[in-house]
Image 1 (cartoon, rainbow over the protein chains, first blue to last red):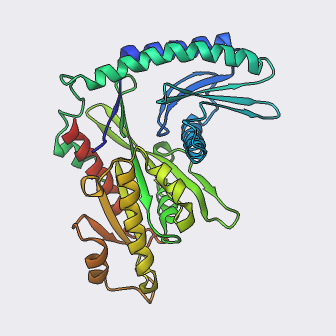
Image 2 (image 1 turned 30 degrees about the horizontal axis):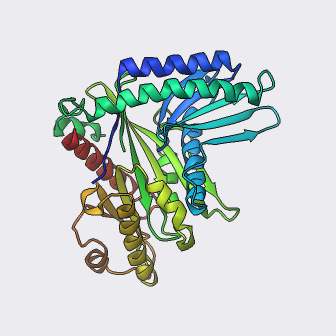
Image 3 (image 1 turned 60 degrees about the horizontal axis):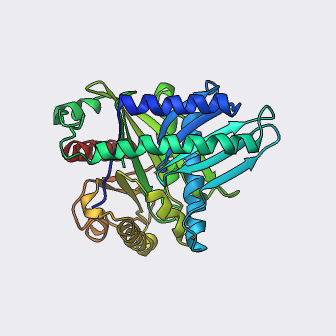
Length: 160
Length: 195
């Protein structure tokens, strides 16, 4: 049965966050965020305070899933890059290492060429971090934060 | 697939509401959304057609509280129930941690229910999941309608593996939270076991 969990540790989270923040600066972007393919938001950087990042994350994953479905029908492996052009803002979406999705939102202060260039660099850096995370997750000695949770803890969550 | 974040101390899980067209999956989510404290929920997203039939999915992020310092967040999704949206249904099942099957209790929908359960089982196994090993709850919806099948009959046909099941009237909210709580509890218990 396939039940892999993603576990994010402080060390890798900080590295991912650094990559996102650097990308915001280097690409003159408004917001950069990373989502796993199931729609869970992993990291966000830039001016995201007034942005519904949870909704964006889920829609991005839906978008990637649908595009992946199209790829399958066309017998392509995947469509790793997508670009949406709006009147004021644009969205660049890149699949990283077939696992996670890197999203860059930018406006006229940047350009598609610059974003593409910087995304390519960030892509490599992120790949390394996620490979390390997978190694850690596959470590048979890794402990889970959930091991100590008791049935009572779970019951208490549902006591009104 | 759950996502455990040590950095933000969060556990994120995905629950999918499955069932035949017009059985009340979206209604379940709408009721949860309307009755949840604004602090505990995000925006509900519905990707629907002009006639309000689900086209791709509905999405509702929900916080259930803390366990041992970890915030528990559940992402609730519905699938489009109409038969021809099967490709979309498969996509939404990816990474699922728990499934709610919403059955339409009306006699004339019995066949649609059976077909949908079989479709659920097939689509899960395509993704490498076994329905019998997943946290799974059944809801018999629309119990207020006059032409409903007997609950024992529904049970004998749809709940052959004896999973937790609930009668519901999703439009009025009856059974909606019971279903959700039972599923969330099974998901967390499963996570604990797998951990």
